[in-house]
Length: 149
View 1 (spheres, rainbow, N blue to C red):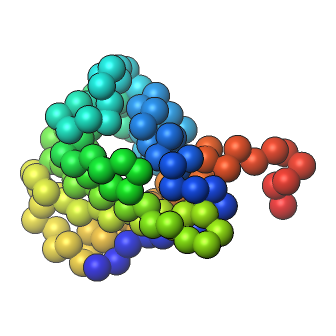
View 2: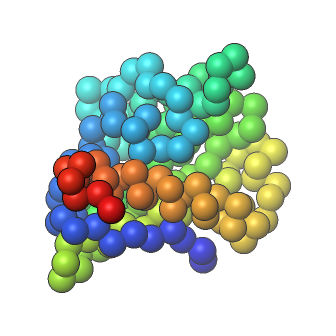
């Protein structure tokens, strides 16, 4: 299974705080162009965020729904992508001596995307997911401008 990973210099609980704030998704999820609503009980199972994907005027309004939530180590989402189908995104947070290792696994589960073999879908999503994790880490670490190399 091909997954994107990133080591973050903060504890899993700090990364989880970012994941648990649904309004931050446009800041770290590549392709998510705007947030429209976040359920007040996010990220409880069954809760959702409503978002838009794409660049105007080619925007798809849809939702991401929580399938599983085990704070602060596991979040499983079903990200709907309009007519393209849906993808299951699994976020795993592992304790490390320096902080946290975040793992992101994305596989298609519905619609035309589901016809793509998982190995090919994982390889295609890998660069995007690496960028997502870079952005998530930046939010969790709250890096100051003087710290950026």
